[in-house]
Image 1 (cartoon, rainbow, N blue to C red):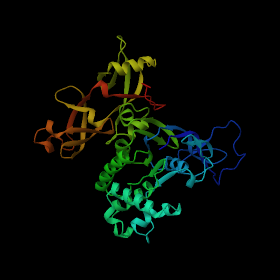
Image 2 (image 1 turned 135 degrees about the vertical axis):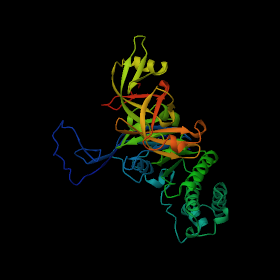
Image 3 (image 1 turned 90 degrees about the vertical axis):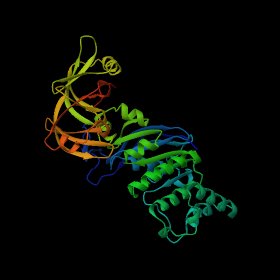
Image 4 (image 1 turned 120 degrees about the vertical axis):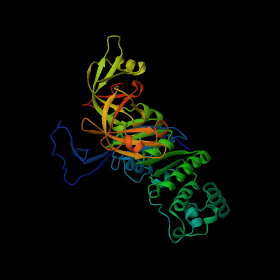
Length: 397
């Protein structure tokens, strides 16, 4: 168990086309594939700052190429740190070899020895440390019991399913009793049902071994269900850090708002108005909705005035209305999901999604939501998010 601190961490990969001296002093850096390019090369991770508490479960999440795995590999010592300071349990480890950092890593590809049994795979690192045989046996069997793979100890990896192999890979890390447990997309090779089961197993595992976890994934469901805190990354830069509920309820920018939540948040071009009584409202398609007092107070504290905005509302927070109220949109597609219907609507030439619980609907769903049919919708001011169209930042923060 240990705390981990990453202070101003930067990772630069030298670029063959970038030569020192090409860029004039003071000239802004180039961007290629949304990554910054300096005279030294491509910046894969830029000014990464994070304090991870002892026994905390941190999840790094973001799209492919955002720098999350590179960050994890720097913590593991598999990638050199270009600049900044990494400390584990109060010790600076920038130049410490991976084997001396007291960490264990589980990879996406399992990385098991195919010619060794499950027992031998799990015992391998302990034998390298020349531990007594009885201690090795005890540690291996304890880990196997935790992961419910005792019955597979004599099998070779090829005789196991994907989920069982991943448990073996996790068990191989557990036996080392590391200070920090690193996981790089360990469930991405599994099918959807098995991923759900393994997520639950990892939660149980965390409760039993009680160590510091740093977990990397591109799957926001894994991030939301596993992490004490989530670090959302884009183009090598941290976009927001917070608890799952914080980043869901209070996204700091358009990227976070669109990335967290499934289906993703709907975005509209709208207008923000400051009312005479000091409150705020948003106007969309002629409909005006008053924002909640809490949102109005945050906007007032920032001195926000009347302006054009990007309005964000999650699909589950939009309500269909009867009669003349609300905004009218055309149905493109309706998806029956059992307990709910996902309506894909067209509004002002843009797509949006509304989630409607079937308990609120009648029997004639196909007729009511046939392609080309029109529906009207509204939303409550407490669930509206307002973003600056240019900076893409949430105007409340």
